[in-house]
Amino acid sequence: DRPARIVNPDAGSRAALQAAVNEALGAEVMLVETALTESSILTIERWPPGTMDNPVPQGRILEKPVQFRLVTSGSDCILIDGRDGTRYLLEKTSCKAE
Image (cartoon, rainbow, N blue to C red; front, side, top):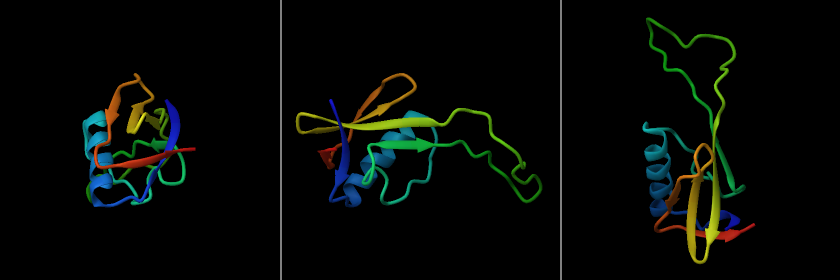
């Protein structure tokens, strides 16, 4: 495994990354279109949901952020969950070793 970045991102690669992250976290998260194109590390911080009646509380969030690493293994792009090492194959994704 070698640290990698996504190259030539398109709708298919973004959908594959989005699906893998959502599966890993068990929730839908918002990712920028350039996620994992400039670095092999993706950090997801928890942001508590708020409503008009119950706004997001102010202050520090003490939960540790979730980190994912993108690696290349042969010709495959693999997203690795830093919490437990679970690996997700990113189909329709091209990546290049850093």
